[in-house]
Length: 216
Image (cartoon, rainbow, N blue to C red):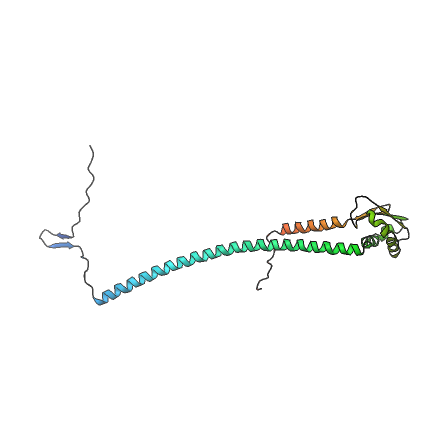
């Protein structure tokens, strides 16, 4: 057997006692107000509305600031990437300029690297009777007389034999002095510089200092 749902209790606005007197009367809504009460209600409503508006404005301001901060973060990330790309491009340009300048200098003074090698190896070759210099075929004849003079200036009393070698690039050479040897290849030297610079840029990544110092 099912039970019927409980009926809500009815509350009377007015209750009477046993003698018929009013024991309780619910307050009736006020239908008329004095000017002072109207002004008080108006002021309270205005204050409540103003407070609600300020709360809404504050929330909007906080949302706007958050959006600005997010945009600035994205902009800084993009700027850092642009700065890194600029550094890499500048490095490539500097390397290209360096290769061009070095190539022109070697064309004008092809004996300079060998002279530098003779000076650096002065102690190792001072008692050697002969040096064998391997160079590119088209440079052998031109360097023979120049290097003999360079050897005398460096204090080397022995002979220098210039020998064409296959596989050597322009301005590259090998130097054999019996107990040891030395070699120079401008293309390989340039590549080593480029590799070292690329490694430095990769290690630096996006954590380098800003292109513009603070306050600029």
